[in-house]
Length: 429
Ligand code: F0G
Image 1: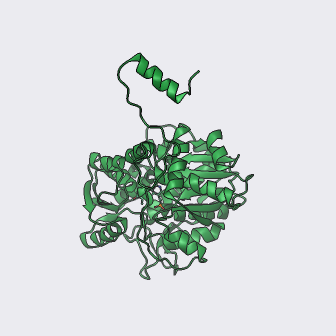
Image 2: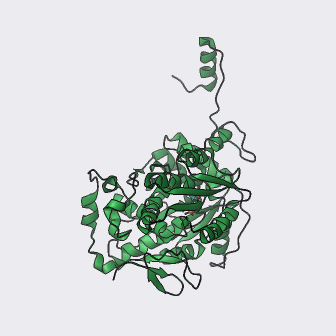
Image 3: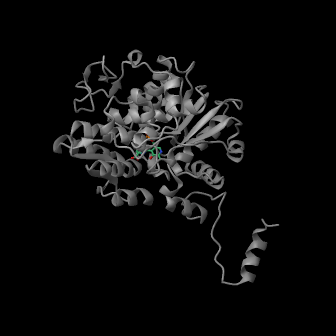
């Protein structure tokens, strides 16, 4: 059997190349691979690590796992290449979180600065295979930046729908620079998400939000890579920020597949972290996975400022499969965690720091044991959101106490002025 699209609710199957995002019953679709027929092994993937060659995709941490991602001809692949991101360990961050076995998978070190490139290389490659001319997405910024870049590489028209005034500067700059038609929707992300779905349906544009099952296939490789980075000995927990819930969905599917294939002996538990002001999944979780009740979202972490997540059912499935948990963190906790990650010389955007804040909270609450091995996913680069970083350090973020502030000191051009500041700060000699 070749790969098909399969409804997660009723199991109805559709051909892979049918252009649809939902089943007739309304359920979300999975790309279902015929796992036993794929003939894959740890050695196959290990053998491809560090591969070189003229085609960029051979170096990609997404296409390394191509049998589990998308059966497609290599000539069609649009790749920067993406993935193959570092797994950092840092004693200062580990101590702050309260775990010795703590590592950070830095997805902000992807080509456009976020994990979205992993889904987008697959989504845009598939758009090409289908022969579409235009692609669209709603976005809090990173999906827009990534889609704009990959669409430009593939020669496709890109249309991005972003919430007006709520997109971090680096992301907006990327969307414009990569040439996407950028629509600033007068409303929040959830309004933009509803509008892009209607627009794609009515205007015949290919939708590249994570509703699209091919995006999920690319994002699964974050988990494949983490497990491979650890020599196929999975961590006890994978902790990550959760907004529209594409990653939650992708991580669950990846782990389920790895276990079905016998590539891992046991499943890590997933810990999805939400901002307290944008927490519909958390609210559902604490009520034993009650039905989704959308919220009006507000948080400093604009990437996850989402109140009505489209992948909610797949996320619940992922958390059930893995014995997962959901935790919420305040904006203060997010910005403190960001300051700690940044000052370690690693750096990330606010939403990514939510993962670190969430890990710390789960450790202090006793959910994660201090001797457990935990990988947190940093989803986006420090440079994505310079306004939030500077506003934190200068004390200009409303409601946030800058506990780890490092504000700039203005000096007249004289040695005395420099010496005076050094004396005042007292961190020298
Ligand atoms: N972290 C960052 C940096 C993000 O940009 C996003 C989502 C998430 C976490 C949450 O991931 O949606 O899979 O639960 N950004 C989307 C966007 C919504 O439009 O760029 P999720």
